[in-house]
Picture 1 (tube, rainbow, N blue to C red):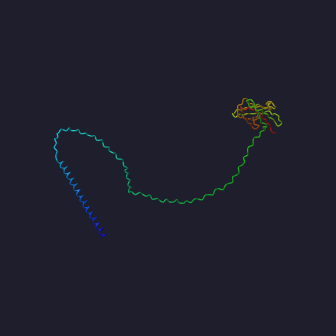
Picture 2 (cartoon, rainbow, N blue to C red):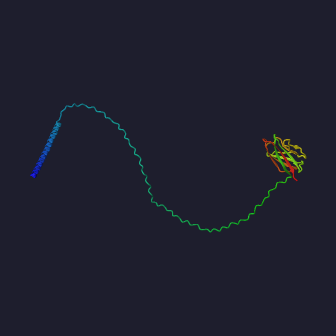
Length: 257
């Protein structure tokens, strides 16, 4: 019983759906047809109105000729083409073959026999250097027994000289020759056989001859005792005379045995 009711219900539903589909399709077809005919009639009506000619009176007047505007066309800027780096064609190698230099064999120098080197000579015995005897100073008959220096306040080059024998006795006949480094030369008087010269009380020295150069120029004096024949009889004596420190001197010559 329930099965029959369900079957009837399905049939009813399906029938209703089929009817609805048919109605909807008819409505769609009918509505689109009406719309198509309405649009077509409107287009035809407009076409008929535009096709009808409209008569109008037009007065023809002479239209002045307008001047022709000759527009100056600006010169077209011609663009300068940029230089292109055109590769220089590579030199085509020539087909001329390069001559190949074949090295020549240099002949080796022939070995020349070297003569044997002579042995160095044997060293010879060098004789020892001979001793050259130093010349002895000349033998003078007088020696310098005293050589003294004293201060003074004058510019004279004064030398008090005593020439004596072994017994301190003054000897006559001798002179003193003085030579300055500038070449000036001065001679003393001949010595006496007695004490004829003395230096004074402060520095007392007695002698038998005096060598004196008043206002002597400064320099180096060399004194030499000579006999009557101008033969040196004693070693020379050197004095440096300074006018800024004036001095006087004493010499004692003693005869040898």
